[in-house]
Length: 125
Image (cartoon, rainbow, N blue to C red; front, side, top):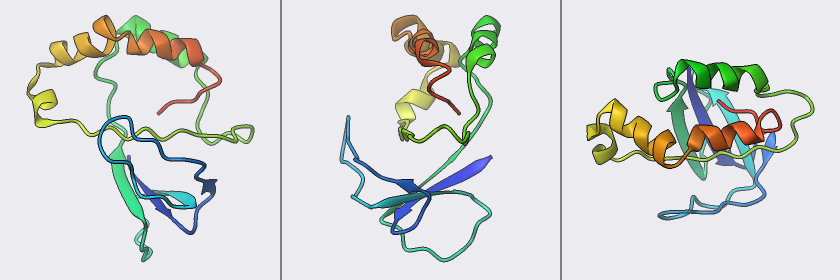
């Protein structure tokens, strides 16, 4: 599913802060709107990001089972905070084999194992 994140003066989410880890930070904006990409209303956002949910290409079967057993759904009523972590993948990343990308994400950085420590409090997509 293609999703658009539009930062500007409207949106259900209040932006508390924007922190850049690498590269330039996104421009400041007071609100964030998350819309299905079919939403074609005119907008003049401070910034917008488009992304899509794809298959989970880096998890193994037992990891996926562990994740889905404890994760919560996005958009639940008791969720009052969110973190949007935009990641731009370089051409060099996509030139790696899937096995090499998997090795970076889990075998070296332990991304999935660390994520499991924060579920179910933090939902993921």
